Length: 100
Image (tube, rainbow, N blue to C red; front, side, top):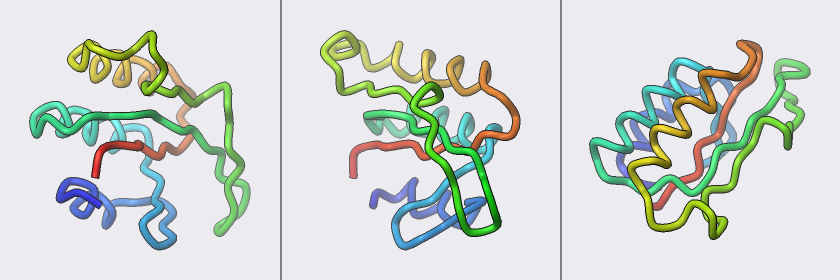
C-alpha cells in the first residue's frame, strides 16, 4: 500500500484489510492526487453497495488501464479515469488500483 492509499483508506465507504471503496467524489480526488504524486493507476473497479457489509462488482463500471491500448500515456489515464468516474451513477463506489 502506498502513502496515498494509506491516507485515503480512512475516507473509505467500505473497508476490509487493504481493500477499500471510495464514493464518487473522493475517488475523483484520489485520482487527482495520484497524478500530483505521479502514482501509476492500473485500473478502476466499480461496485454497488448491496447491504452495509456487501457489495456487488460491476464490470460495466470498471476499467483496466493495464491493457495495451492504455500503455504509454500516463497523463491521459488520469484524465480519462476522472471522466470515467464522473460519468457514472452516484450510487456506485470505486476501488482505484494503483502502484504500491
